[in-house]
Image (cartoon, rainbow, N blue to C red; front, side):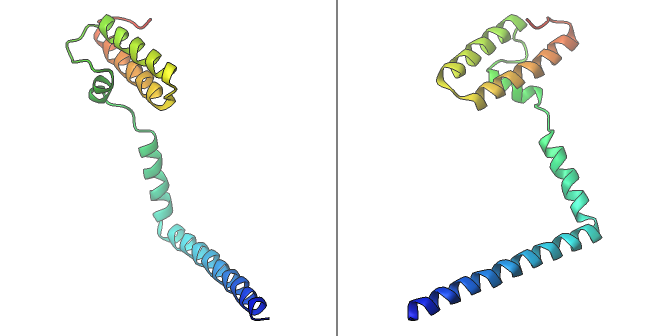
Length: 116
């Protein structure tokens, strides 16, 4: 009998807390949209998500310096890309690809070479 009462109290208590949480969340959203905070947060999030890789970061990922020839950059890229394809690190493989694309734009703009 006591277990049944305790179970009922737990269920009712969690239901009340859940409803209160949902109501508080809705109120917070309403307050944020009135003050413009929601739009600002969305815009800042979009800017951070679309952050492009810098040339310096790309050089660090591929392990090349500013004076490195484009052919050497491609060799480093191929080595890192293939090694990560074998070991299954898709994240690192993606970073290596983005680094190559970033440097491709930098080298292409300087007229030092084209991508293959």
